[in-house]
Image 1 (cartoon, one colour):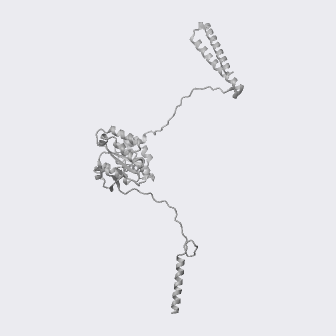
Image 2 (image 1 turned 30 degrees about the vertical axis):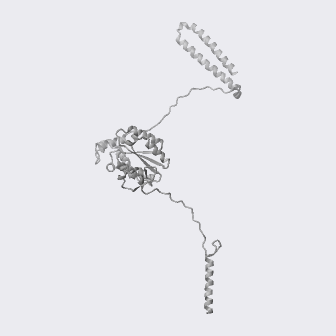
Image 3 (image 1 turned 120 degrees about the vertical axis):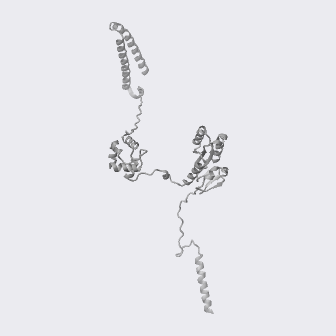
Length: 331
């Protein structure tokens, strides 16, 4: 009896000890308790848009909805007509309705208020004379940063909506042309540059001539012997390889400006530059005087040489007066 009681008390005491250790303060250091590790900062994934095309209740009865079959769609309370991405929306506009209510599209644009990065205006061309209306909508799209998409039927409009929605998470490289990775691919790409030559024609050409150099230097009679090459392909190939390279050189011919003779201030350049300026003025006036004398001598007859001295003397007096005025102005 006493032994059992002692055992019970011992086990009870051990249980209390375990309880005390289990519910002890986590801040106190303990050899058995693991250390708390803080989680590392990580970037959360961006919130993606809905998987279905969101359709405004304004579009009830639009025949476009009957042709959206590849992707699901559902009605939603949205300012745009269609939401086809997290940052992409579309407005539907019929040209027939636009001609009757030209203010409608502008009122719808005000409701968007810059909520979407890519804003598409899906225009249904359902009138014969549509040039003026499309010109107006094109200007509106440029001013308001819109993308104008034209369609001529409801299935085509539905296909555009499905295409935008399916390409929501596509990378820009999805629409990039595949670059040639080997010499053979580069060779085929070069040979198929003319429109009517395909890949099989390129293989036949290279296998016949053995190298691209021989194919380029081949005569039309030799090229016509290639299997599958007709007269049209031979002519296009010969025109393509014999055409001169276009080198675009833009030479900007600038007209020489008038020679401006500037005089430096006397206080800064000293008396030597002043003398040089005066000598230049005198040299210019002397050259003018010499040209006037030669002109007068060529125009007048030989026997009237005595009469030329009088105008030249008058010119000498005028030049002297001009020099005096220049010197007075400099002084």
